[in-house]
Length: 131
Image (cartoon, rainbow, N blue to C red; front, side):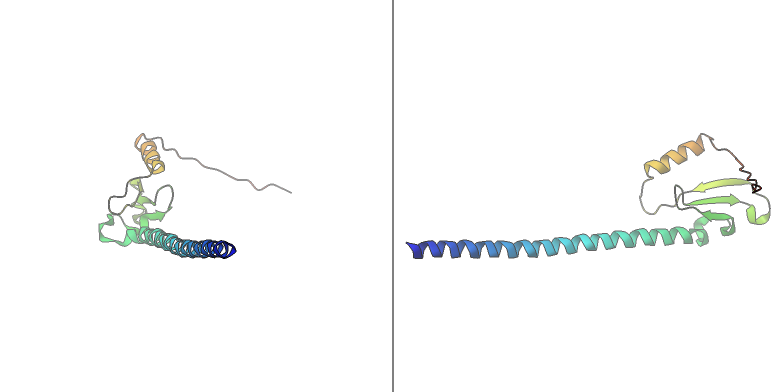
């Protein structure tokens, strides 16, 4: 009877070890997949940022690259159309999208404010304090 009990305990112990090994293998594979996904997303974001910086030099840009200023967020570029020629004709807020990427809620909100002409000019004049 003790021999059967010892065999049962040994069987349970072997089962637990095998289950633990399966778990470790699954965890390693899952962690590797998550890391790979994170790396791919990071590369995509970096490539997108580089692409946004280069957009003013692409033939389809449609503006003088010297007139463009990169913001990145909440819009990619602000174009002061005509600035380099000495006569600004308009200010264009430009969002760069590739493929079928939709505007984010924040980008849609900025677009709505601009289209509603809720745009203003402000100046902040600082004076040096006499100390």
